[in-house]
Image (cartoon, rainbow, N blue to C red):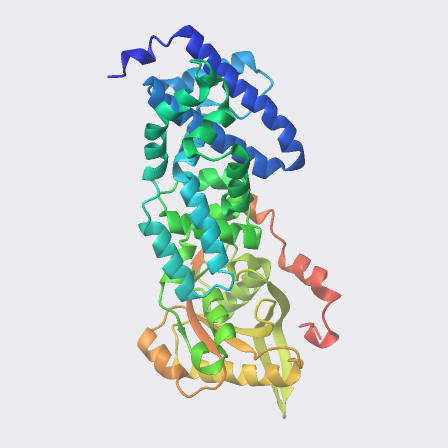
Length: 432
């Protein structure tokens, strides 16, 4: 049963409470002009902390949020974004990212300046195991006497959001703002935060998705898909089959292993229900060129079905990309069947050809990526032994679940090819 105080909130206190929130809303509008997203998030975070504090101090229950939303509509009808639902998210936001979490995110950023599978996994585990969620509650519970001492006036503690938040964390609001804005929390949009708040992701995994969203420029729709398709596990947690450590120098081998996913998930909308291998491979090639976001950050399309004349024979590489982070060509071979050892030999051949025909003096070693419809990992690892060219082997899965609103925002194969045509040598045009 809700505390009786909830139904008999002293009018003066509640009016002052609403006034303080309204004042913070108005002040935020000025700051939003210069740094809209980050300042809006900081504003939401402060509001969330403020509501949580007064819920604890006044003994108010959850219905106070509904009453506050109604009061804001009446007193500030032109202000949008303060519905009961959004105010609830603001409280969740503040509870999820108290100040020591923000500090930990900033420290983790510094340690992960050059990411690798092991580094990321270790840092995510540290964040997951940290005792962060208790900080805000503990700070709020220990702040009452200090805040009353600080103000000396009953209404002053209600009337100023910034002073309240400063007192909760015992540092100036300016220092709190600097920490907030320096953290990855401030770099993604509110819609993306709401998606993560609606998912029961461990703290470290949330941090990783934030970083990926920033680095890859994901929209909230793309973030939602990446979470639903469990990208963290596909890129970080799953065992990957490759020989990168044996064939690439340490910094590049770590980065190549970090960028590789297993499995890849491709949308095959428009493919025949009973497609043969050629149909599937053709659809997959078109899909990869259309949805480079699944390949990851910094992959540029170079050619598909790239023709090479070697001796008296013609050969066609399925797909050639260029990885800007790796400074290397990536040769992708797509197979509509489970892995066979001879596939590694075929890919090794194409890597040698690309190294000879395309690789420049400033490019690193060409990397091969073999995408198969399943694999026996032990067989695949044995198959790579003895090759001196870097090769990764991943599964792929086919999905028709990419929403129409996302598809419409992505370029078609033709649009990608037209846009990049000016950068390609005539020899890179599959039509030649």
